[in-house]
Image (cartoon, rainbow, N blue to C red; front, top):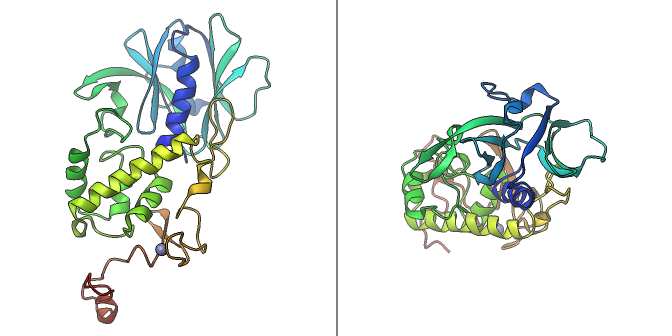
Length: 300
Ligand SMILES: [Zn+2]
């Protein structure tokens, strides 16, 4: 599933081609494309694209009409720039053509969790964004991203750290892959309760998440399931650098212990049971002996 580095790679690719383009024609080939449905995608014909923007995993083309074409790649969406004479694959959901060029934008989605829609732009203290992104927090690539504020809003949650990292209203852009990677780098077990994690650890965790995602962006993202590609159809190659995600049974690159996978919050979580110690279970019957394991920090 595309996360921040993958969506940013797509945004950069689109930003090279789309700004200043005038929309000549829009062809919708699947009903799910007009997700919110109030205004149809086709109503953008005649508009000019001003800029290509992103918050978290949401992408949008700002139009010269005060609104935007907003898109989300979902699980398997792809946004490609193709020549009009290239064959149209069966999973193409929408095509946008422009005046004065034979290149076109194609939205492709095998599993149809992705979408494109028209939305109005609203002014917020953190910039102009589509209304449907109102609840999406800033992502760590945002020039106005506030680390202290993000630590505060993380530390107020009474939940497990992995669940909070995936919550797009606290910090956006982090999905399953980079959450697992950031937790591995930070030696934090995914099921640890936030209240047991210090502010310094949270700071390190967000910094690690940002670092991992920036390194991934440099390599064009992670094409773990072969569905994610950039606008020219190229795969990313960060997956060779993954330390935890997708490495079940393989040795931890820090200590050699086998990476474990658990299902948690309806997702797979990958971690090293040695480097990322499980949270202590509080005095549950029959768990007392296990409960003391690793209790004191000084124990080795
Ligand atoms: Zn380890």
